[in-house]
Length: 128
Image 1 (cartoon, rainbow, N blue to C red):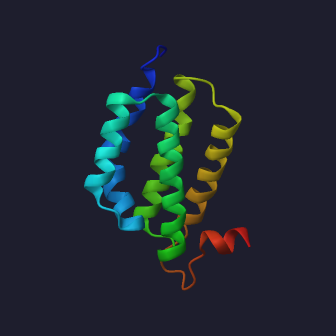
Image 2: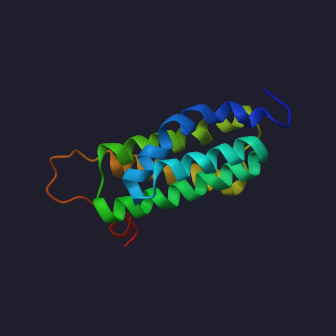
Image 3: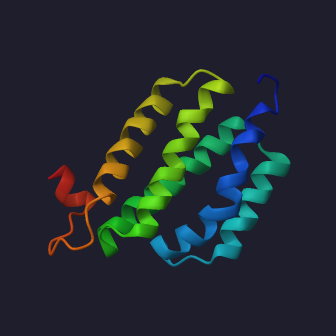
């Protein structure tokens, strides 16, 4: 897939699921997130899309710090990671996008911890 708008094929899962998952992560309303996504889809480009994904990862990390690993945050980590796994069909990953993919893989692993663990690790503890 090539072309200036090829990145748009990445958006449906994020558009459909991420606003509600981010609301669980940081409490910001899903409607606000939906508007941000629609603005990027209508007026943005691949650079703004990947910038948005970085902001989603930051919110995910804050959610993990505040709430520990949950099933919803694990799903969010998976969706965000998948964006970077699919990205090479649109354009080669830049060095920063490759680092973002590696960080999201770490967050997928971190949030996959069984719910029955009495101690949930946070991003801060993981990096500590």
